[in-house]
Image: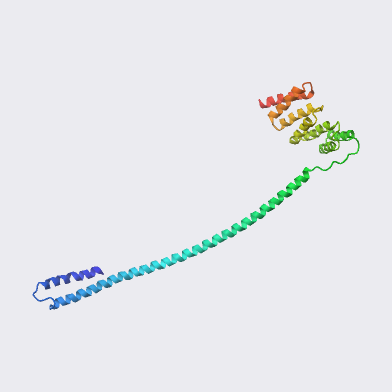
Length: 259
């Protein structure tokens, strides 16, 4: 639009310059007056053009404001959703925390109950008095072991030791109690039972055999150092016994197996 106006303006200026070469005063020259009017009209047209640019700018501003409003609405929606999500997360956390507290309380109660049960189990029942003498009861327990009734023999020797702890046969009973575990391959139970013979009955004739079986239990458990130590002690302290000969044979086997 502005280019078209300039196209009109250039010839008009040429005419004006030509008119200025005449001797007629400009304020009386009709051509000059006409040109002046045309110039004023051109100025108004330029203002209109400029105003049109302002209109376009205003329109663009309105569009931007509309877009801003849209973005603001989306932002508010997102903020609302975020607040709701945060609230749901808080509710979920409170729920999970409450459930965890209930589980922890239940677990603590179970632990207390288990401890009570263990305490009850650890407290042995009072021994039931057996009929007959200590010799009779010892022989009955030994017969169970000899006949292969190992579990019954275990209970019988335990009962014997509870009822007749001071019997001269108590050391033998302790040894054979340990033997009931050993023949069932319960080496972890047999090991401390044989050790009790050494600890509680240091003068017992069963010491060489108990020490030998301690070496055998450690051998079966692949505790090589402890096995060698017990077997060497049998040979060193009870050299003239069958237990010493068996200890020597087992040491030789360990040497072959271990290289």
